[in-house]
Amino acid sequence: MAIPDTVQTPEVLIDLDILQRNINALARAVASRGQRLRPHAKTHKIPQIAELQMAAGARGLTVATVGEAEVFARNGVQDLFIAYPLWVGGPMAPRLKALGGKTRLRVGVDSVEGARNLAERLGADAGILEVMIELDSGHRRSGAAPDAAAEVARAARAAGLRVAGLFTFPGHSYGPGAARGAADDESRVLSEAARDLRAAGFRDLELSGGSTPTAHTPDPGAATEVRPGVYIFNDAQQLEMGHCGFADIALTVASTVVSRRPHAQGGGQAVLDAGTKVLGGDRPAWASGFARILGSPESHVTALSEHHATVDFPEGSRLPGYGEKLQVIPNHVCLVPNLVDAVTVVQRHGADTEGDRTYRIVDRWAVAARGRNN
Image (cartoon, rainbow, N blue to C red; front, side, top):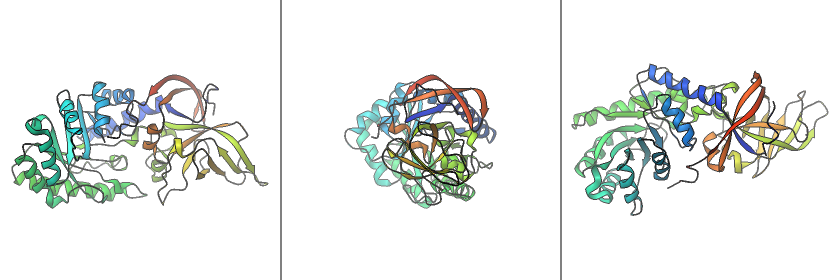
């Protein structure tokens, strides 16, 4: 593989052609199931990628924070969902009012207390946004139990809020073979809670679900919209769960070999100049390492520190030389854009195989929503 000499490692690279292909492929798949697509922009935090997603048919964006919503609203996105059970303090309320005045805005709540707090903070402007009731579908994080959703919805309505529907995150889909069961759980809790809300007089409900693993399941279930995020880039987790191949990896971190320990039988260890401060440090128990190496499927990142990645190359394989640039596939790609100010956008020319990508630099994108954590 040939990374341009002008790239100073470690550097986040985005392959524009693969990015566009991933965006288009899932947009078509979701549309074919009769669902709407609302991608989660916390994965990329980049307005140019949001534009590509909207152009491919996304009905709006999902974000995790008010700050992210402000960035994307400022860049022209007119339909935003803060998919988080907000607890609104004094400084947040005027920001929500301002957002609701210039874009269609939905926010999450998962409790009677949260709904009342939101309405109290917004006061006479409570109707400027819509609320979605969050459900726990098995991830055991935030979210109300399905049989408690109607109580939360009634409290929101009584407080002057407009209830738009229900949402859940099937995060327990992240594991080998887990996607199908998580998708079934998602559909079940959305259906159960929707039945109770309809009985309480709520109509035209949006039922929002979806993660990247469950977005690949062919049955739409009960969800009317899905909110995957990782699919645009893919990462080592998606690779090891079987949801993508090496040819579907759009984001890598270009890194240089700075130290090496050859083995007599070939292979050995190489140390790269990329650590947790650019790759993140996530490693689920089932993962084979902290990251993978593009073009070397049998190699694994076995240790990470702040600025070092230790890569094991199996016996009989070629150990890269000093100064050689490799492309590291992060385990959890959502962490990476938030760790850098900008990314380098590249396109391939010449050879076009999984292990032989020859690049030219075509753009540089600022990570505009980086650090917008509140």
